[in-house]
Length: 416
Image (cartoon, rainbow, N blue to C red; front, top):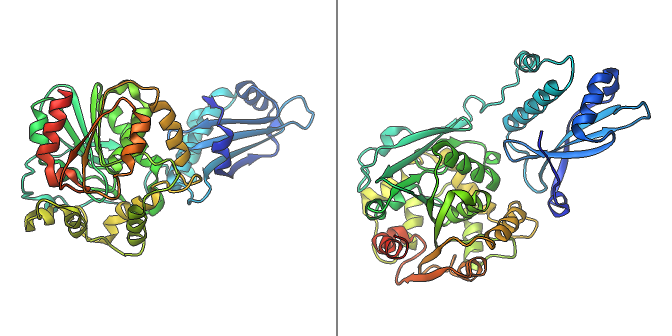
């Protein structure tokens, strides 16, 4: 177990949830003593982060018997959010029990697995809790001839397309789009490297958990980090827009050794100190509707060109019904708009780390975008050495759709 020391600010934004407790730990003195040695204390609290990035604590109590007498294991969740999916908590608790069995004499890790199976504990997505858009809905996509590839990420199928060879150029989309958004940029960028365009979990051809609490800022970052690990991507040129930046910049802060440069387009890294009125208006709208008319949302932001009927259908293809839109509907309320909003603290930590990086940064901006235009100043404060912004006139929020070829030329000119 790798113990951590969480910051007081982080703990102040979380709520403790007691999950397991043992009031007679010293009935097995050898177990109690092994726990004391591993934790480094007889009474008090130690913390660790799970493979799901959740924070947990082990609290020990001493009743004067020369060893810990009681123990409590707690999880810490965002104060104003639901509990994480139960299968994630179950998996983390089983990991903790496996750790205990591994350090304590007389306990067998194999028995932990047997007891879990006997108790019906399934640390995996419950049957029927994950939706998958039928492949037939992605037939004959205009301007998008790329065959999908798939990686398994925490039991979910994550899709991506790629083109070209060389160092990876990672294109991250936002909401409510998918990799199709980058179709105008893939061919020119593929002349400079291996273009990789994943569909975020909940979007495109990727799997779509049905429960809203499956989606958090933290889980999206974790899934993408696992994707980078699965493909072992290095020397990455990150090209990110909308939520692709909110996620990609967090990834950069966590694994800077994987990245060579960054291109940020109409995005930001909000730290909870407020958002522009245009975003708040969109947020209110998105939380009052039962389903999103995705093609219309995209068309309403475009300044240069209308979507054809076939292109509009391509943007709608991942969502056969509103049940498939959970990830898209949840995303707007995950953007940190308050200092105590889930994700705000982690973004502030990420910003501090990003300020210490010296890798090249390019800003490319659709000029006619009221939602993200104020974020330029914030990104400048994080990356004072950034080049740009290269302003693309008469282009809106989805600059890839309005002026993808022009954005690609700016990237090629500056980065390759």
